[in-house]
Structures are given as C-alpha cells and as structure tokens.
Image (cartoon, rainbow, N blue to C red; front, side, top):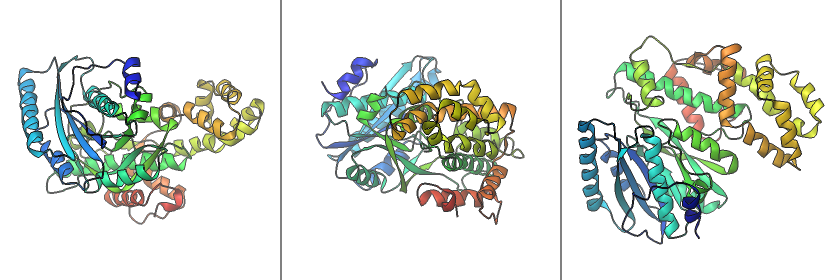
Length: 429
C-alpha cells in the first residue's frame, strides 16, 4: 500500500477527476493551478513552459472550477476556458513537461472556491505520485494570475536534492508594480498591502517565532508524502493557504527560496472574501485611507513569551507562573484566557528534552494562536496603526535608522532583505 493509498483510505477523495495518461517514472514536480474565469491564464502557462527545465519531469494541472450556483454566463465562460486549455496543453506538452486541465464543474456552493479547487488538484497530484510511489515528489502551488521566474524549478530541485529532510519550500514573491498598467490608487493599495505582508513576517521572525514563513497560496511547494500525512488541503473559500501551511510548519522543515521569485498580480478582485484582491479593491476606492496593521508593540510583548520558552522547560510550574508576572498586561491576560499554566504542565509532562519541549510548545503556540493573540490584544490593549507607522516603529525599536518613510522605499528595503535570506534584526539594512 503506497502513501497515497493510505491517504485516500483515511480521507474522502472524489475520484471523479482523473488524468488518463500514466505519469512518467521520472516525475518530480506537479504544479497545481486553480482557475476561475481566468481569461489570461495562458500567461502563467507560458512562463512555466519558458522556465529552465529541471532534471526530473514536470506536470501542470489546471483545475477550472465553478459552483453549481454560478450564472449560466460564468459557467459557459469557464467551460470555454477549459476547452482552450485542453487544446493548448496538447499543443505544448512534451516528454519532460506536460500540461493537463480538469473541469471541476457545478461544485457544491457551500464549499466551491479556491480552497476546494486547490485541494482537487493537489489530491490528484498525490494520486499520480502514488502511482509511481514517489512520496518525495513536490507539489507546487500557483495561482492563475501569477508568473514564475526562469529558475523556478531548478532552484527547488537543487534544494530538495541537497536536503532530503526538507518538507517543502517557500518562494520569494513580488507584486506587479507597473505604474503604467495600474492606476495610482491601485498602485498605492498594493504597495501598502505587500508592505503589510512583509512587515508581519519580519516582525514575527524578530519575536523568535520559529515558523515565520510567508503563507501565500501561489508561493509554496510541499512534498506529496507530507501533504498526505497532514490530511491534505482544506475547503476554505479563502485563506486556505494560511491554514494549511500553519498546520504543517511545526512538523517539517521548509526552506526559503530567495534567489527565485513568483510574480503576483496586483489586480483588484472580489472573488474571495479576503486577501490581496479584496484589499486592493477596498483601498483603491478609498485613496485617502491608509492600510492599518497590527501595532508593533504587541509583537514586542509577545517576544517576552518566546524568549522565556527555555525557562518554562527548566523551571517548575510555580516558577513559570512567577515568570509570567513580569509579562505585559495584555500577554498575561491572553495566557490566562488560554489556560497557559495547565497547558504548560501538560507539555512538560509529555517531553523529556528541551528540543522536544520546544517542538511541542510551538505546536501549541502556533501561527493560529499568534493571530488569536494579536486580535485579542488589539481589542483590549492596542490599536492598529498605519502600515507605514508600524514599519518605522519596528525599525526604530531594533535600532535601525530610517532615512525615508516613503512607502515604496520601505517596501524595497524589506524586499532586499528578503532576497538576502532569513530575516534578523541585524539583516534589515
């Protein structure tokens, strides 16, 4: 029984979606792309076709999808896109790179959306890797309006080849900032939103949180076996990437690929309830309103908890309680709300080394709990502030000079830091 058989036996799988052509025995990458009303999808397929070829073989699976509640016009439009992609795939596939398209039509309205479409494609990728029993095959996740760098496959292949313990990879990203293509309002909105994404990742890394990776649906890859062992993608209609990756991060090592890039669209959109498209749409309609983000003080206070993690292991519960008395009021209140001391006692009881304690501790205080904490203290102790103000306060707090508060200057500063690798306070130049 393969890893894929075990996965499909345990978790529900809709085997309606099939690719008749058997996979190559040298298959190493499967790219999954959800698509809904994506007339410009050939741009990303062309960028994949033009990318440097890895040694292993590659497949691309596009999941054209729509809800049973969609309008007849939208259904017909998606069906035409599916037919176009099927023909394009036949014309552009070769022995090393094959393009496939499946039509996930009339999906249940309750679940239809990018999460379910991504799951359909990724489950199909697991099935195909399972046919050649390759649990180390990499499932790469992209969006239909993105583009990939020329070395998208080769740098990932090199990373995986040189480190068999890796569970996956996180790609560097950049939104399209073409001022000639987008209005001033859209340009301003996307610069603010990307700065927020980078600020959040950088300052979370500064707190000492061990899993501070970007969680963008078009910028990650995961080994098929790891994907299957964590129950696969969820059905969420937005934020499926954040929830899935934060579930996986504590159990596996992910490498950050900073010498390649996924180029993201800056278009406004209302297809999902939150994320880049809706934020850009909302901000561009309110050009005088700045994007607000979490107050950096909340992160500085959270750092107290993570800095004390080793002490929690080394001391008794009563001593740990004394340590928490020195935490900021919002942190103390949140930990009490989460029954922290009882949980800490449980974690200590089930670990026999500092390493195992830290792993279990951050399985509990994971990315979901970080967001829960931030929302909690922003209701009681802190107020959200503009992303520009937040970034400046963060940089000043860690002793970095800020010569320009122009938002594009701040964004480029973080972009450059990201290209250099994992962020620490002394790497933010």
